[in-house]
Amino acid sequence: MATEQRALITGISGQDGSYLSELLLEKGYEVHGIVRRVAIEDPQHRLSRIQHLVDQIHLHAASLESYPSLMKVVSEVQPHEVYHLAAQSYVSYSFEDEFSTFAVNVNGTHYLLSICRDVAPKAKFYFAGSSEMFGSAPAPQNELTSFRPRSAYGISKVAGYHLTRNYREAYRLHASCGVLYNHESPRRGMEFVTRKISSLAAQIKLGLATEIRIGNPDAQRDWGHAREYVQAMWLMLQQEKPDDYVIATGETHSVREFLEAAFGFLGLDPYQYLVLDKRLVRPAEVDILQGDASKAHLRLGWSARTRFRQLVRDMVSSDLDFYSRIQREKMVGQSPAVVSVVAPIAVGQNALRPRSGR
Ligand code: G4F
Image 1: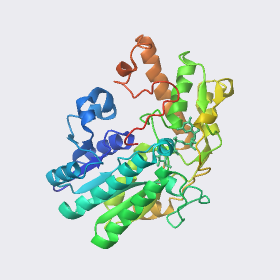
Image 2: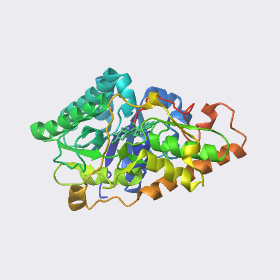
Image 3: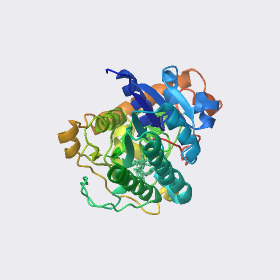
């Protein structure tokens, strides 16, 4: 790269933020990230996914709920590229608190777009849209499919999508929206179903847990690997013209299939441990998501490589390594705070905590 590019990432401490930081550092970027002040004060726990990068990146304390704090960071950093990943990203929690989901996801996006227009109008802007925007729209979905969101989270992402499009059209911002389908990895938060399954499969295998509680096992999702999905984000901002892209594998699988594959890798029968728990069923479910990423393939040269079974295997084997190590070090039974230095561990099997960033 001729002159050093500066990138600013909101949600840098999440799964996607950590992979994106690694990618941008490899490409020679100066990487800046926005985190909440509590994270800077408690880095061991709240910055665990980027602990290996903290000496190479620049962290700034700000909040998506505070326009002045965002204004200060964007003005100081003067980024060439802005990746807006931070959100209240847990769909289930958005049923419990619609208002804070909107405050963070809609106002936060609006603040950031408005600030970029005013103080960094040449910055290229990426908005993390979501396949939840499609909701009950028939599969497969692509960029022309109408949105039919089924949660406050989905509605907040539709609002963010339209804000991004409007800033592109009205103010000529280079603003793009990635409509990303579910993307997972060993760094996925424990509150999402894939990591819940991989971690409990590993714990059951090691005798550290005895059951797994699941809500709706029949929901179908298009699950890809997060490391590949952040490459698509970067590619969108390298295009001459901003645009919106569906990013997906094109395959769909049920939660039940994930469960069977994960336990199967460990030689376990999931149905000996599965408890269907109505309390985990959402008031409105998105039954089937399956993306058609042809446009991204054609224009960005991007396509998903990691297939379903490989993704499940990677997550399960990573969790098996992790819990085996914990067991060896006799850390089980100690404070989960100590354990989460290594990986974020949910306290209890159904921890329904909101987490910022994916
Ligand atoms: O893993 P999930 O919580 O992910 P969800 O709701 O699909 O959302 C994720 O992907 C979106 C992209 O489409 C992102 F925008 C969003 O931020 C997030 O990353 O749930 C997946 C499915 C759902 O149908 C849910 O009802 O699994 C079902 N499920 C069944 N039992 C469960 C459980 N989900 C969770 N989290 N926990 C359960 O026990």
